[in-house]
Image (cartoon, rainbow, N blue to C red; front, top):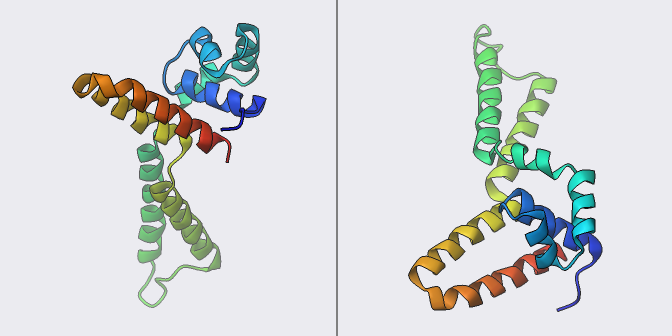
Length: 149
């Protein structure tokens, strides 16, 4: 496998720190950069804020989008009979909301992949400790590969 670029290492470190709870020092060792570089990235890219924003889950985003769509449809249905259809702006908004919902429901981000991987590794450590190390190495390689795309 090819060596990761500095950008790929930064993206990987961001996931380790903001989603998996690694310390800056642990992440620096894992992605093979200096502690100074890691600290610069942490401050420059606001990873402390990213940790907090991760609390707004995909489920919460989807819920808001469904509420927006429902509110628009409810307003349309309150019109007199024969006028209960979306105008061009409303139709465009409904289509955009529907497209965003489809995207959120079907796309898996690196953060979500990492979260599932973390759960799988924890399960493996508990039930198959001898295989957990190999699985962790495989998963590590998988994440590196995904980041290099």
